[in-house]
Amino acid sequence: QVHLVESGGGLVQTGGALRLSCAASGSQFGIYAMAWFRQAPGKEREFVAGIAWNGDTTGYADSVKGRFTISRDNAKNAGYLQMNSLKPEDTAVYYCSASPASYESGDYYRQHAYWGQGTQVTVAS
Image (cartoon, rainbow, N blue to C red):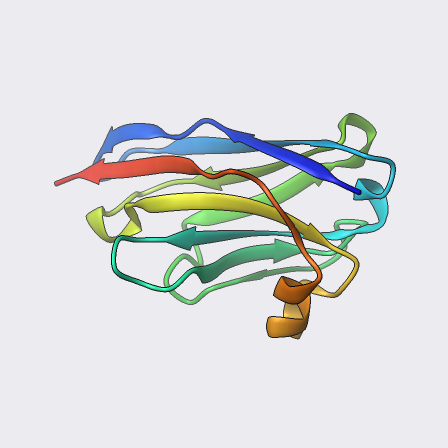
């Protein structure tokens, strides 16, 4: 069992930056892949970035490549999403997740994932 709590969301101007944090409890977090998803109003939840359990590999949605960086610190049971050069289209609720499945496995990851409650990110134009 893994319990996840996100923090760090808020209101920022276009071009600004935010750092989201994900605090995890549960002994399995350190061996689980982790990913950030987001959901904008009226849209489906979409993958943003993922990282392997040991941090060796990462992956990003094309829309955030070069602007967002995912990282984790297993010693602190924590994950992060650094978001730079934010755009209004980045506005969404951001969710932290952890799963025994690879973050690259699509629906299989989602079906086996634990989820946080989400944190709102709003980018003003």
